[in-house]
Length: 344
Image (cartoon, rainbow, N blue to C red; front, side, top):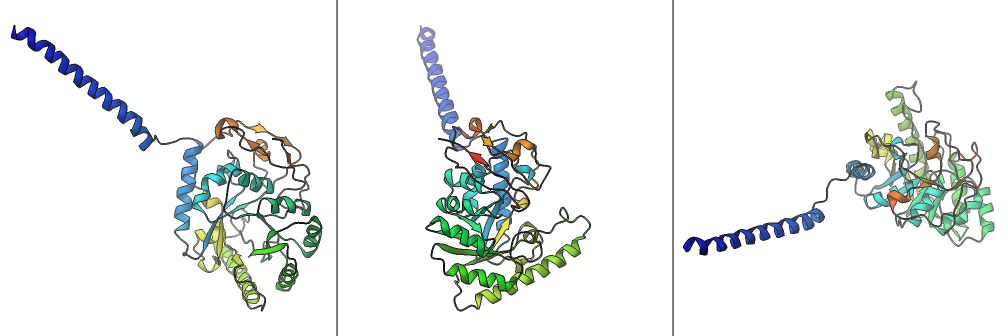
């Protein structure tokens, strides 16, 4: 009799234990997954790597120096990315964002980026209104360029002056020209000077015949030229102390040339290397593209096109990138038209 009475209790107890165990399993797997998600892979993993590099690089700076990230398709680890989307993913780690092309900067704004954005290469005067509309800062090539832009009835355009310290790409060649440009722009109520910059960017990749000591010596000399410019400008009676000076890039930060940091650094490839994950370009929907030219011939042709990947990034998040008349690095050497045109 006792055996018949205890068996149902035993069975009931086992069932209760199984039910409790199953409930614990369900709760743990459901809430545990949210609290501790599996490590991401592919592009997301690469983004995490970039963030780690940014944090490490940023730790080398003083508190007063701002950290700017450079997003250009010449960096191999970025070939699989829409740069506007990548900017949005990295924005919270940086103070400034620099793009090589205006359409990437516009895309970043359309995706919700709030940090200051500057285009590092000259843009066509006809596209200045587009830059102003999206609060994108640009480099001033000349006073003549400012005169052309002034015809467009722009309410406010933020600009950077550029001084050629030796790279011989963008920038005017003398301190006198910079001062002249500064004074002229001060008289334009619609135009606001945000920064003064220069490019050094000498590396073994660009100058394979040079040794590291020669590169460092040239860098220090170029930095001294820029420091001289800063001294002249900051002693002007009408100087605006809010204007930022920026010279250093990855080379200077990596080699600890601290007197080159000034107010802001522009860091590119050391944010992304050694990011050794090899990825094939994502499946992309190519928009209406005309001729596009880049200096770096190693870039795969598909990545020379403005693209988006709706399958990866969600629905078509880029819905209103307007037509850009002339948008390419080294504008004098590479003339392009009708870069991109999309509709909602």
